[in-house]
Image (tube, rainbow, N blue to C red; front, side, top):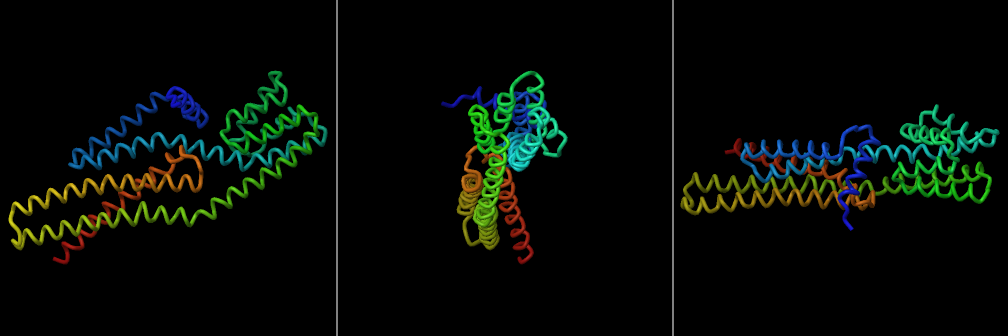
Length: 302
């Protein structure tokens, strides 16, 4: 069931994890204000449809920025976690304690993973056991790979297995899984580029060119007196309707393209927020860029 309060709490957590010390309601208010400013500016320019699209883009950029930072943080943690596990295994084999091993890891350059190990060290100093202390990493990192690894570590501790050997095996498995994920994304790069080029550049550019040709035909017909004024006025109204429809359709197409790319590469619908602003920006630059450029070229030919 859709729970708006739970979503706001999760989003607030994402803000804090990425050093954005601001209340979620205030952040959403800022996003709304920026979106309304963009909407107002385009209304002043006489383009309400583009104003609505601009509002959605600006609002989405504000909402998506913390999610982008969170995605980058998780990716770095997944990258460094196998090395960290191997280092813990080595330190345990040399006779070090859990606390000593974690304290040593906090001195290494593991990016955002260092913050998580500092939290683990703090809990160890507060009297929690290693299993309970390590569980905070699973709570703070929204990664199935990390969560499953920590779950296996917890089960191994409960079973009394040799933790150093388990950590070495997990380190190697995580490294292979991370490499497989990178390979999968690399292999889908061409398909992603094709969808991006077709949905966010080529198709919007064609729509802009179509509008220019319609304007050109209307101008020639009107200046040459080939049609009555009433007919030209009706055609002009249809032309404006076509532009409004195409403007909305560019947005829908960019949205659909971003969703396809997300399901192909990330397999998480929520990550659409990370891709949609880029798709929308490129789509409307292509749409209006080709529209005005081709109009300028046609005027130069007349």
